[in-house]
Amino acid sequence: MKRDYFDSEPRSNEEIDGKPCRTCVDFKTWAKLTGKSGAKRGKNCPLDKDQLGRNTWSFLHTMAAYFPDRPTDEQQRDMKTFINLFSKFYPCEYCAKDMQVDIANDPPKTGSRSDLSLWFCNLHNKVNKKLGKPLFDCSKVDQRWFHGWDD
Ligand code: FAD
Image: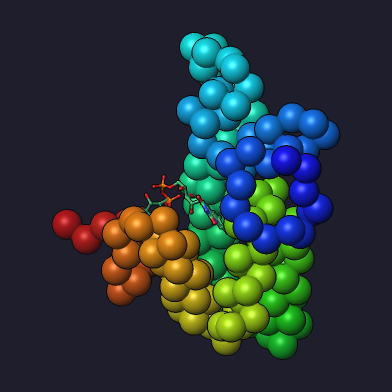
């Protein structure tokens, strides 16, 4: 099924240039849709939805962990712009569309490193909830993405 870039509903059979969208589905689904066995899944292959998601969350949470404690007005503006643009270009279009809705309902909090870390944690939890995954305890976000786990 061919879709416009910002069409909203998730579709496991959505296509880009006539091919199943790899970043919109997990690898198994992609292999099924393309009729490929999946046996040749190697290290240097394009990302599927879940690999893309894991890598992207790692970047976003780490970026938030290193955001200034006292950001300037310009840094705050830039971060908001970054998040808005990011949500337009994230290469899983229904994920991006949902993120745009989440951002509209709860705009990015950029007042400090800890505000931003918590905001991303809550955003990630909205996706976790949608996917039926356990929610992450956001009081531990710095241990996970900044200081490391307490012993
Ligand atoms: P991930 O959810 O990728 O998490 C990686 C690690 O982050 C976890 O191991 C955990 O240690 C930590 N973590 C988990 N939750 C939190 C949190 N709340 N705060 C801080 N750290 C946390 N997939 C879809 O199927 N549908 C979607 O609509 C969708 N939307 C997405 C939107 C965005 C912006 C991104 C970046 C990804 C989206 N994904 C979506 C992918 C999805 O969120 C997961 O990345 C993917 O399912 C792989 O999940 P995972 O279990 O490996 O862990």
